[in-house]
Image (cartoon, rainbow over all chains, first blue to last red; front, top):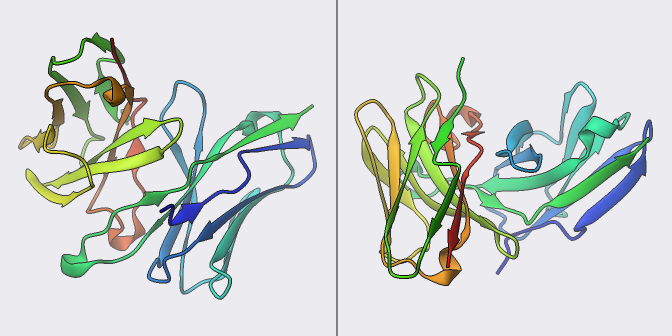
Amino acid sequence: DQQVKQNSPSLSVQEGRISILNCDYTNSMFDYFLWYKKYPAEGPTFLISISSIKDKNEDGRFTVFLNKSAKHLSLHIVPSQPGDSAVYFCAASASHAGNNRKLIWGLGTSLAVNP
Amino acid sequence: KAGVTQTPRYLIKTRGQQVTLSCSPISGHRSVSWYQQTPGQGLQFLFEYFSETQRNKGNFPGRFSGRQFSNSRSEMNVSTLELGDSALYLCASSLGLVGSNNQPQHFGDGTRLSIL
């Protein structure tokens, strides 16, 4: 059962426009969410995160929005650039007994930014 | 500051063999996690090591094992390899345990393991 879902396997946008990547989760215990970007033949790179006590976090061109009632988060990239073309992963974690956490990952969305 | 280093980058093995993958974390990072990435399953968590102790474990069979050394370097071992073990194996390091103080994980470029 996929607890973190990225329902769009791919997304294509024009350079300069906004890219919106979506992520849904099912576990209401998740309280920390991250976005990673992955280029081919490289490991994922941390992009931005958000704690469940917030509903928005912004870092330059990247903004993550969290809607806890809908169990939904989104990553906005404005303006999109060709170098943003990559696979974007959403990940979530919850605190378990003994304070152990593990990240649960979505399957990724492949973003193509066209010049 | 050097990133997470994984060796080897590529590996070809046959069914029934065993393999050891290596990961050197970012200097000062004490947590090392291992993931398996396959096209259909995404990133699946294998285990996390911190201060030479396994702190967390995913749902993989006992053929998958790991260890961490006093310098925080980690190795992952897979015994009796199966065709389904073909995947990209990623190592990630962080200062503290995953999720502690909201410290993100930093990934290596992975080891591509192919089983023939």
